[in-house]
Amino acid sequence: MKNLLDKILVIDLESTCWGADPPPGHEHEIIEIGLCLLDVATGERGENPSILIRPEHSAVSEYCTQLTTLTPQEVETGISLAEACQILRNEYLSERRIWASYGDYDRRQFKRQCRERGLDSPFGDSHINVKSLFALAYNLPQEVGLDQAMALMGWPLEGVHHRGDDDAWNRGP
Image (cartoon, rainbow, N blue to C red; front, top):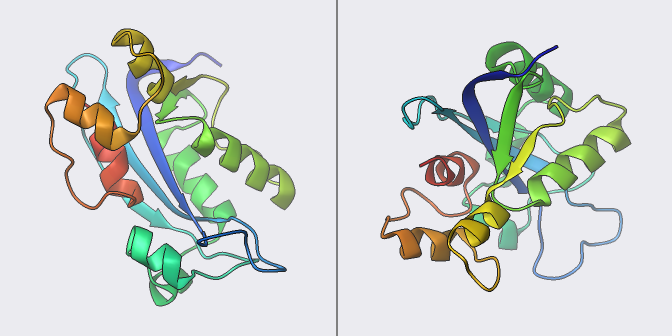
């Protein structure tokens, strides 16, 4: 199956988090998948949804809510990771599109959580680490955070930093 090269699927995950290590019995779980379709030919950013995921083995902490603005009540209305993977495959053709994320956390988290849940990853093997690519393209001595990269380009951060849909949008230009 050949890759579709018309759009890049820009992904940003938010996961359950704590100010320190997870409490006993809890783990980092995906609670939001933000995405933005980037048209390769025009550079235009398109659709920009947020898919909320209901965690199975952890809860949204106060720290997590302060960081992401996602509340336990919002996340409880989410869908399962399996359902989210089907949406990515069916609506965004994720298995056939090159996908990108800012850093490698999103790729590793998706791979780990799908493996642990017995799910096939909704993505193909073609992944772009925009954080590394940005540092190389701008000849930086080290990788920088999204907010620093946006500042270096003279672009404002739009929306709420650490919300999946907003961060995916900001990674798209």
